[in-house]
Amino acid sequence: AAALLRNGKAVDSSNSKTVNGWEDVTYIAAGKKHTAAVTGDGKVKCTGSDKGCDVSDWSNIEKVYAGDDITIGLTNDGTLRTAGGNANPVSGMDNVADVSVSDSMIAVLKKDGTVDTYVIGSGTKLSTSDWSDITAIAAGDTVIAGLKKDGTVECSASDDSISDAVSQWKRMKYIAANGNTVVGFDSSDNMYGAGDNNDGQYTNTDSSTPEP
Image (cartoon, rainbow, N blue to C red; front, side, top):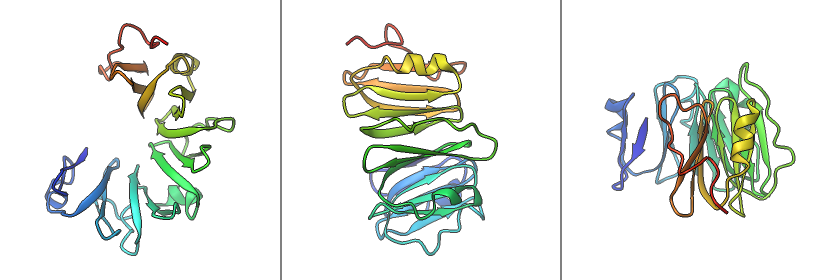
């Protein structure tokens, strides 16, 4: 896990000796074994992976995303840079608004509100071809969710019960996904979740379906 402090410094639980010395950090991401961060000059610092940290020539980076030996950089003009072999399918993609990476999937939110997904390794392809008006995305290993402009959430999952539950959510402002779990917060800061909850990842507010 990695975190960005208000003073532009970073902290990290895996690569702490290196990361704790970084300064002028504007964005940070933690992968399975490595940590990457954008600095104020648009460059990227990275530690923990030879393949995923091949980023020394990157510039004009606004955001960075990290997976299993994968680093993806989003430039100021919406173009993607990649390091690590499994990220090659999205290298050079343009008109990108945001990215979400898991161990099994790369999800790309385009500026027109549509979403493309790319399988990593033996992951399962999940369909997002009919999604539109998406403002934020969250990719797990077996699920992907997309927050729409109207506060509802699109969801595609290998387990239909997850997508059925998430499709009922309304007035949402934030979503996140990991593994086989999706969580979200609504406009009143109530928490909702669907999928694996064996480790207490979420506590549903009253029920899994927010009131309209």
